[in-house]
Amino acid sequence: MMRKRIEIVEGVGHIRFSGHEGPARYAIEGEPARLRLGQGRLKGSFGVDVETASDAFRAGVGVLTLEGGREYRVTMVGHSTGGDEVFVELRV
Image (cartoon, rainbow, N blue to C red; front, side):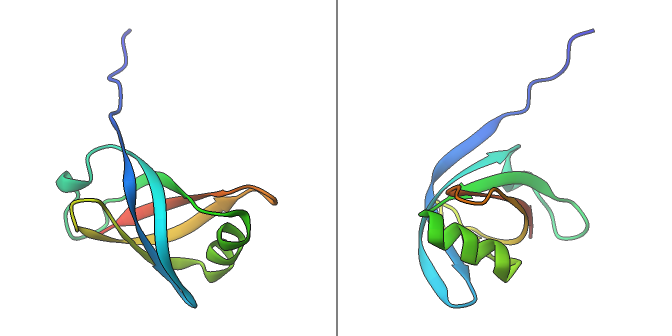
């Protein structure tokens, strides 16, 4: 049985969370433009420097602005100590 391949949307955007605003590269599984208000969520990640990634994970929530200007609320769900990537769930 063949599985449908999930599109990965990548780019450089802007991350904002308590005490920080700055650029971040992102990768999102699925098409963010199709996400609608409600319970729907997409998985993804964003990359920043190691210290900022740790601070973002501790903050727990934030806002990710994509290249096109669209903003998404993010919940930080994972981070490896010493890593520069934070795994998130996005919603409108």
